[in-house]
Image 1 (cartoon, chains in turn brown, red, blue, green):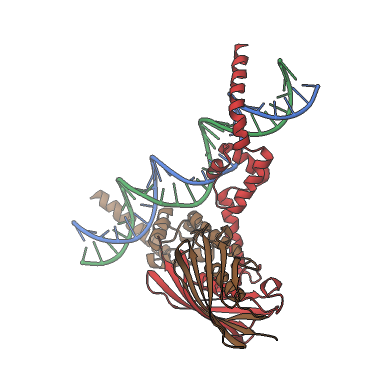
Image 2 (image 1 turned 60 degrees about the vertical axis):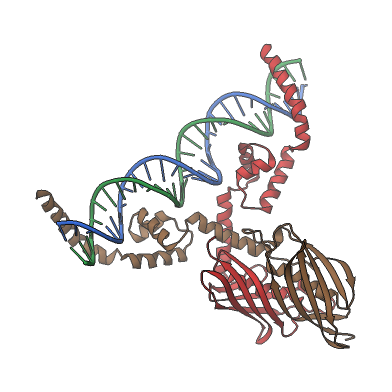
Amino acid sequence: MRLIYIYELKYGGFNSGRRSCFVIDRLSKKDRHQRLIQLIDENPFVTDRELTRQLKVSIQTIRLDRMELGIPELRERMKQMAEHSYDQVRSLSLEEVIGDVVDLQLDKSGISIFEIREDHVFSKTRIARGHYVFAQANSLAIAVINDEIALTSSADIRFLRQVRLGEKCIAKAYVRSIAGQKGKAKVEVFTYVADEMVFQGNFVIYRSTGE
Amino acid sequence: MRLIYIYELKYGGFNSGRRSCFVIDRLSKKDRHQRLIQLIDENPFVTDRELTRQLKVSIQTIRLDRMELGIPELRERMKQMAEHSYDQVRSLSLEEVIGDVVDLQLDKSGISIFEIREDHVFSKTRIARGHYVFAQANSLAIAVINDEIALTSSADIRFLRQVRLGEKCIAKAYVRSIAGQKGKAKVEVFTYVADEMVFQGNFVIYRSTGE
DNA sequence: TTTACATTAGTACCAGGTTCTAATATTTGC
DNA sequence: GCAAATATTAGAACCTGGTACTAATGTAAA
């Protein structure tokens, strides 16, 4: 009985004391979650310890909240940002000629080889960025056209399977139609890694002989 | 004397044993430093432990080397990269990546700017190579998808008019559908030079949340 | 009042280090 | 050939920013 009394006193005391605190400082779980998301969004470099100060709850609560919200720890957040920026910087320069043309029969067909290196992959997955595979095919499609000016007009492409670091892409282009003196040529390109087709594209190439 | 003798034996033994190791496995300090710089440059996410394997020296040596060369620890490197990219996203002026992302609303839309320079054009015509315009759009389509792994599955693209040296390409991406937890998202990208649309693409992006 | 949920506390453990001391290995100079 | 200088390795204590887990306690709803 006495214990209960003490508890009641405690409750009462804290209640009247805290209730105002509640209104001013503390938030409901939902609101705290919202605020947490906002704070991390504003500053992704914030530690749990700093969050406890701002939200006035224990560090365990912060961690439970992150768990529930699926927000990774600071280091993981930084890592993800770093990887992202690394990928961006990496994708810098597409070389002038992408792939080595090893065979070329103008207006008929061509073959080029392109090896996927560090620069061409996403650092996390080591899978080639699509535009490199595209660039190889696009360059070949243009090279195979025997014309002063040849430009890609449109393309319909499929990435059939991911290409990984170290793999050699062999692109084969076939001219399907040339369409007269001036106009559009259709070129089909298939890219293989070993026997496996990894990319297929139908290119429409604009061409104009003379000027 | 006996101790010295033992030492000499040891030296001799290790020498003849190690000398070959030296030639095959080990490098001089200078060479190791060069290699260390190279390795960290190639993959900034490498830990000291991984470096010990590659350079065949103890972890203490790696750490002394980093100290001498002023290379910070992995976490600090990641932090710097993260901060750099964070600053980049916040500020408008960026390096020449394949398009500078100036606005990004994940799973919604994004905008990137890419200026066509000498490197990006056919020297003869001064018209941009198609794959650069494609790369800008492709990178943006992937960046706009809020996912661990996002890869281009297929694309349907149109080059509406030639883009010339010095022109600024403004690509706008819109996520049209996300298709659940795992699967394919559709992203539409329009690239403009001033008011004129020069490129349009429909990308199907493969995405996989978690792993 | 009992039950369910929310919050807090505390412990052990981890990666990937720093900092320091100390021993040993190898090279260099004389 | 030997001492001094330099290079390498080993180990312990400590740090940050966490995870994973157990357990107690506070608070609201039935």
